[in-house]
Image (cartoon, rainbow, N blue to C red; front, side, top):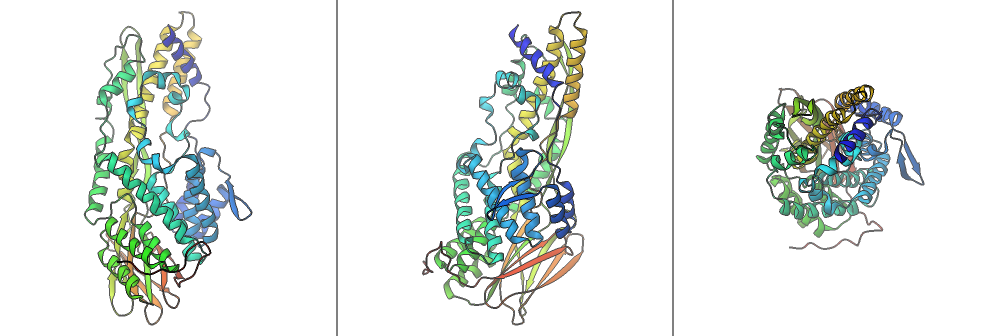
Length: 512
């Protein structure tokens, strides 16, 4: 019958695929970065993935697999920024942002990615050999909405630190992404979708001519580490909500926008950015200080932005159960799933800023832990449900193909069986994510110290403390700090003196 022939072709193709779980190797660079060797990490990144530039712009990254270019671009750009190679980081962030916008529009990113299970049917998974055989890590890495906001915000921040024009344009685009996400979130709602068990079972049983098997995905989602994984993500989200640092629209973008508009003299836009920061986070003191600076023209202040800790990375777990098809045979179901690993060890939990006369606590604007967890839960259809259907149909394809062979076709049957086992063991989940981000982002606005030195203190949950002293220029300035631990710190300072960019209007007044 036709369905058996489809499965025979798929099962035979299984043995011919040479690469599963293949992604560009970049862990040596990210490991060095996570250990605080910022310069060393940038050199390793150059060696592993060189950057091609033409006429002052990035033309391409020499990744092993083109599907990884935007992922590696994010990772490397952040490494270069932390290493002080700001001009190169600017060009790379700009390249990634442009490529992401070309591949898809942000308007559809939140709602149309992840996939819509209402469109799933057996033919989609059974007829498309690539969908059945290839793992999620074989697809093109697409930036999620919060990643697009962060990438554009770091691009603006880089321009502020480098003292080059154009930061306000990038900040404005990041704000546009925030506005688009606001509309999408309103439509999508707050609740995370639950697996449509009956529909998923129907897709799987629809791939069997008899339609009979006791296998159900309901049993799959009670195994492995699904419950523990959800619990860890929910904890991260709830902890961040308690301090109003869980908004996926990324309050950090509003803080960078405020600095960008203040430098370009656009005070009314800066005032709106300060208000946005208050809407997106609980950084009340910083918002008030920013608003006052817009209105009274305070000449000497220091905006302190602190990236603390390390963002989550992905790990994986697998699930194995038997599948029995009456009157056909039996086989083994094996699927492997991604999971978030939160890197809480050693991270600073309290950041204080002293301006010479007083000490202010920098308030957490964002929890990247929570934002990443929320994005993961939103994308469960893509990350957990689709791999379950893929694994089930692939296993069924193997056993059905075996049963469809003539009695004397033992060699073909053996190849099919061995191919199915090889693919089941070799497929890997998509473990790519922007791991060079911080875990939390903090903000404070203080008066410029008379001696020109801002003093920061860091305390970790394990009792370890550390400090840093950063010299700032005259007048208004911005300080950007990366503190992986209270003792692994790098900092950069730049003036925020009003400049008129060729692409921005003249300084304006302040609205109410």
